[in-house]
Amino acid sequence: MTSSLQDNFIKKESLYGAQNYSPLSVVLEKGEGAYLWDVDGNKYLDMVSAYSAVSHGHSHPELIKTLHDQSSKLAITSRAFYTEPFANFLEKLSNISNFESVLTMNTGAEAVETAIKAARRWGYFSKGIPEDDAEIIVADGNFHGRTTTIVSFSSDLSYKEGFGPFTPGFETADYCGSCECGPIDNCLSIKSFEKKINENTCAILVEPIQGEAGIRVPSEGWLKELRELCTAKNILMILDEIQSGLGRTGKLFAYQHENIIPDGLILGKALGGALLPISAFLSSKDVMQHFKPGSHGSTFGGNPLASKVAAKAIDLLFEEKLIENSEKMGNYFLSKLRQINSKVIKEVRGKGLWIGMELNTSDVNAKDLCLMLLNEGLLCKETHKTVIRFAPPLMISKDDLDWAIDKITKVLRSI
Ligand SMILES: *Cc1c(COP(=O)(O)O)cnc(C)c1O
Image (cartoon, rainbow, N blue to C red; front, side, top):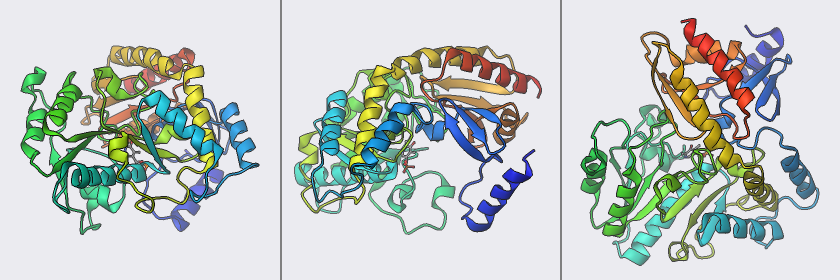
């Protein structure tokens, strides 16, 4: 039950705001570490982390100090001029990722758009594809953002309905992770990518683990097969790690679980240290050379304030061992969730602190379960009505997880 104070804000939002979300009925006021408080002072453990944008925890003191210091010095300049924070951020991101070149934007969707533009130019200017014929192959169940071009190749009708006409130049292949094709050399997903490739294919764009689709984890070896396919056919392999990157899966990047290197990498969300939007497309100089002055840009992209905060966020990722904690706590959390004996659970899967619990929806729907967890002090978000996603901040402690596991167990047993 919400209080009249909360009802007031909920009503106001529905009255004045577009109804493009349906939030859980809780009005938040404050965050600290892995915890959030509502306007009535009730405390919750955050298992959503703003869709994995909050890795360092809410209101990290050092990030806030960086934000304050830089904002009182220089915040926004546009790219018409050089700044020190931007230069240092580029160097840092390039060094930790081993990608030669970085192009910064603000939101994830903009970085995906940047990757698409880069792939197309590389296709025309390096590979020799005839102008306007380039094709990019994406995966069924993908989520790459909400622009008109990106929803053009979404397989989710609710993202597309009434938003056409759509951008051409995209083909959809089957993702691995829902099929039961056994050993990877028989993988039907790889075969379906292979089938879509022709001389005009410039790139394959996929998520190493599909988050919005319900934490779909592909079979071991899948990314490697895809890498080999791209290399053999002279196609760029571009990974959208906006959600999976920067430690979420227990490695700095999810592709490191498979010891491969993609040709292009897209980052966002947690890059902004849970304070600001900043995103990036990373690639080789060979790919990035095709962006000439004037060919692409963004007013706020690479601004000194976001650059300074992002550089600090990267430092803290290592200093505070958030990646190791994600791996350790993720393994612990996954094993504990798998031990819960409940007929409601169909499957628990994930990597690092990115876990999906698929439900037998004849027993309960995922949103109702989220409401029950909310009443126990746990903020969770369902995806596709059947999966509850657990993605706490990467700094979460074992004690906090134990507390969460107790609550989750209690709620599941009560059904
Ligand atoms: C969130 C997300 C995006 C879109 O990022 P926005 O900042 O919301 O535009 C793209 N790809 C993936 C995998 C995401 O999780």
